[in-house]
Image 1 (spheres, protein in one colour):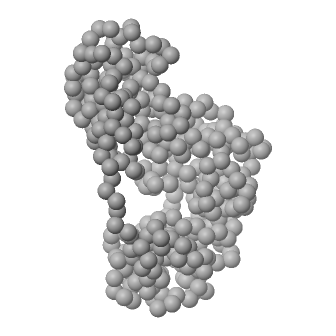
Image 2 (cartoon, rainbow, N blue to C red):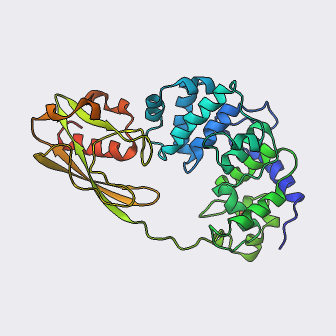
Length: 352
Ligand code: SF4
């Protein structure tokens, strides 16, 4: 069954006018143009992250840095700490680089997909999304929700990731010349609320009469995914060194995994190798337990060692800092180390 490109956008936009989700970064259909800074910020935060997880971070970022110039002027550590817990920390570094570039150009985001693409850290998806949503341009915006809707609408059965080119081609074919932002957001909303991954609600779908997967009676089969490769399992250790109500924290190297974030010292584990097992002190160490954490490319089992000695002075100030335990929440520890810290505090009896 072939879907007609002139009726799909019309049906979808009519549905969107009545059912658009109310999101803090979004302008209602037909109202004033949205602020490009807020659209860009939300799109960067939403990559690989759910709307529910982003809401609080978005509110906090826009409260502290209401304009791109204010974000550009913020200290790196402050922004990295505010991002803590949202994951994929390279996004925060790129966010700052991009904010500074836009501020240096007078605070205006470029209004075209091409111009946006030239900014640091703006990939094809984000450039298309901002061009469409903030500037109303016709752009082909394909996130995971849109990918699912299009694969079902046209019953595209080439497995992902190889099948993405065909999905994009079909998405292009149904993207209208006008209302680019509303169309992109309508597709996202349909995927998020009706054409959901596990149980598509075809009876409520404005595109049901045009949907090939529904006609086949098996919408859940699309998009077809290639079998997943097993995630490698890595092991490492992290070290909780406590002295006078303070804990020793280090700053991770600027590039690479969790780069630029405060963290507990560890034994050098990374995505391709286990850690050495060695800590910043000889010990004696107690064992507080293990933390399991899944990154995109590997799973980590982190053993937490707790320092039981009294030679805290041997740690060099240039390698880290003593952080007060009663202000640990302000350290901006990424989720892995926040979990480890909770474990240590429970082990040492400091967490009720
Ligand atoms: S009819 Fe069902 S499968 Fe097809 S687009 Fe709508 S919700 Fe998705």
